[in-house]
Length: 317
Picture 1: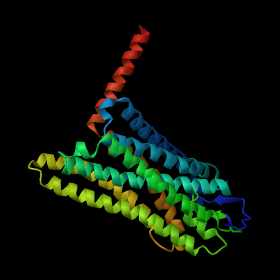
Picture 2: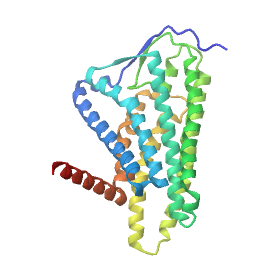
Picture 3: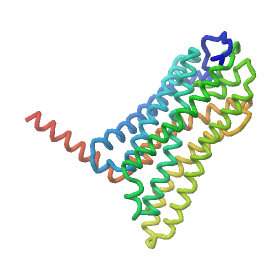
Picture 4: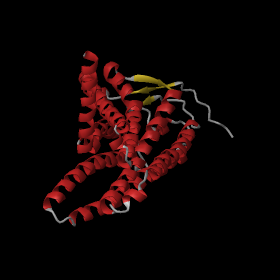
C-alpha cells in the first residue's frame, strides 16, 4: 500500500490574524497571560491532587487527568499563536504541521471523553450516593481514564494518516493560527472528499457521543437537585451546576460550530475565532470552575502553604 502521494510542499504558512496584526503586541501579551494562568491553574490542580491524600478520590483523579490533558492541548497551539502575534505569519514544516494536527485532535478528544466521564461521576455522586463508593472505585476510575486515551488514539491516528496520504502541491498558506485537519484537507490537490467525510464522521462521533452522555447525566442531576427539600441546598447545587454548564456550553458550541458540518470551505475565517474559545477562553475558566472554587481544594492549598511556611521557619531557625 502506498504510504502517501507525491507531495511537493515542504512547509506551510500559518496566516493567523492578518487583519489585526497591527495590534499584535497587545494580543501577544493578553494571550501570554491567559496561557500562563491556564498552565499555572492546571498544574496547581495536578500537584495538589497528588500531594494531598484527601483529594486522591475518583473525582479529583479525573480532574487532575483533565488538567494534564488541557495543559498538553493548549501547549500544542498557543506557543505558535504567540509567535504569530509577535512576528506575523509563521512557517511550519509539513511534518511539524501533521504532528500539531494530531496532538491537537488527540488531546482535544481525550478532553471531551473525560468531560463525559466526569459528568457520569457527578451523576453517580449526586443521584446514586449510596452506590457511588462501590461503582466509582479507584480501579474503575483508572479503567475509564485508560479507555479515554485508548479510544482517542486509534481514531485520531487513523484520520491523520489519511491526511498524510494526501497530495499537497500548492497553495501552501493555511488561513488559521494552527494546523487543523479542515484547512489542511482543503489545501490538498488530490481528491479529498473521502478524507473530508471521514474527518466529519469521526469528529462528530467524538463530540456528539460525549455531548449526549453529558446532557443525560446533567439532566438527571438537575432533576435530583429540584427534589432537594431545602431551597438553600438547591441554590448552592445550582450555582455549582450552572458554572459547569457554562464552560461545557462554550466548549461544545465552539467545537460543533467548527467541525460538525460537512462543508467548511466558506467558514474557515469564522472558525479561527471559534477556535480561540476552546484554546484560550475555556482552558482559562476550567481550573476556576471545576476545582479552584471547591472548598476541599481551598483547604488543601491552605494546608500546603502552611507546611511551606513551617519549613521556611524551621530552616530559618
